[in-house]
Image (cartoon, rainbow, N blue to C red; front, side, top):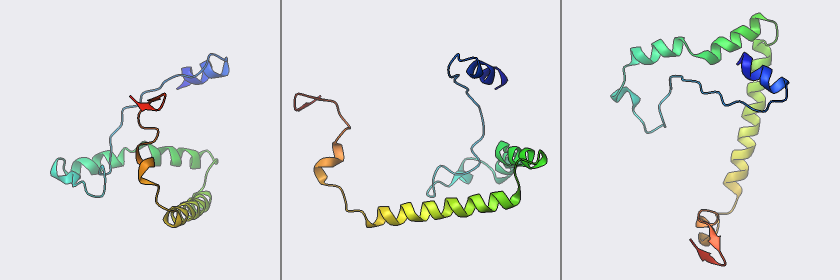
Amino acid sequence: MKEARERAAAGEGPTLIEIMTYRVTAHSTSDNDLAYRTKEEVDLHRAKDSIPAFKQYLIDLGLWSEEKEAELQVRIRKELDEATEYAERAPFQALDDAFRYVYAEDEGEVR
């Protein structure tokens, strides 16, 4: 990360950073992840989750607080609720549009 920051600050462009981590939640609400891993395994990795650790690091530095976290959560919830409401009121797309921009088109023919 330090090297990537130094490269960016020097104007050397972006750096791809691959981070290997553990997915502590299921793939979806219909995925029973406990069918292929144990609760103990998940709990072990949840305890090592880097996001809460980074949050605590920022709090320890005085750059973040539980109050700021609560305010952010309220703003995020409001934005999500507004977006959900907008989407639920939106008309369904035309059936012909379902495949628009899915395939390349060349002079009116789909390739």
